[in-house]
Image 1 (cartoon, helix red, strand yellow):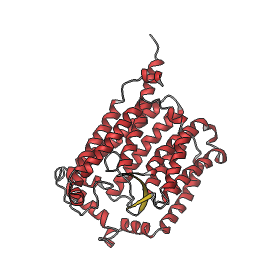
Image 2 (tube, one colour; image 1 turned 135 degrees about the vertical axis):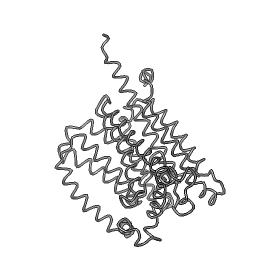
Image 3 (spheres, helix red, strand yellow; image 1 turned 180 degrees about the vertical axis):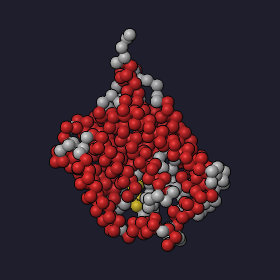
Image 4 (cartoon, rainbow, N blue to C red; image 1 turned 180 degrees about the horizontal axis):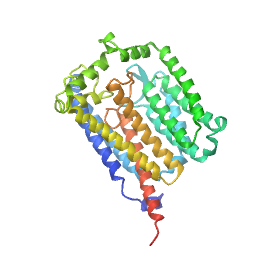
Length: 378
């Protein structure tokens, strides 16, 4: 490890810059969207901002430190990490340990703070899959020896997350893992078969919970129940609509005045659209596209299969989460509780997102050092 640190290249400035820009926008919008709620609930207009700054500080330090770690250290501890994530997912389901918020038992309280085990599982499963797929890629074309064992692992994690329940996080986890299996060389025929089973299973999940059916109905026609299940999406669209091209101006949102429930979390993009307009919203989306592009570039230039899969998995996870969150906010898909990476208020989400970005930076550093070491003298 000491040799790795001595041979470090400079940080990937493009990726680092994108992360800093997203963090700055996030801090600005967390304060702008939450100070009314903070004043009302805690008699402190800076309550959410101060906590978000703390989470960002911890996450930023973690990102920088992790960027100096040799990326292959994650492969060494992949099994331990995944086992720990499963233990946390089981603990959160135990009454008295798991905390219920917004109808989901998804948090474990530690003093004044709490952690969300499903956020750890997303990263832990990506690391583990990258490890086993890089070591046993030749088996991935076999349903029995490669594809099915991976599916069993993925859907065990998904099942535990759905017991909370947390469909948004579960969707991100499954879709990210499917991308990794596809890139690793799994047969298309296996995916086609899985798609049929998945559709049936998804319909079953919706039918088994009345609130999910209500969310689908609210998505199709939110005005059918404007004060109930359609309330959140209607208020979100009311925020985005008046924003126009330039927005109402920073701090001038009307929907944050107790119309849009807790706008600093899942629906923070609504306030971005309202206050910063189409330009602000498109700039935010562009930054996520650039983040995905940089992640793919790092994956292509990575020195081995493990680092390629790991970089692609992290980039895909962040891009999918952003895409699902923004699609919900603008009414393209039914409401699912999922944060906007780097921007939404939330300790576990922000800290783990920054740590995942640190792994991307580590892979990029090592790819550059390998590139330098293989350059001819003349």
